[in-house]
Image (cartoon, rainbow, N blue to C red):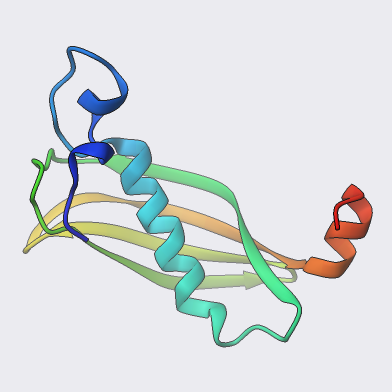
Length: 115
């Protein structure tokens, strides 16, 4: 993804630098992890983020191309654990671990009273 101004710290916090925001990097890592396993899920099931342990190692400017990766490192009943990384070219921007929980959408919605 190419970093837009809307995903910078300066966009959210006036006076801060216009560099890729840590929460936005984490969002991309989470989305990459979800995408990595979506095709292996049974119909009616999704995954939701449950844990993040991420280090933001380097700044990236607006217009930078950022690539995120996710590798499954463990499956524990209904929790899938990932090693995640973010790069700008060969330069590592972030790294860490992320967990996603398996959720049956119908059961989840009934429990919450959602439709």
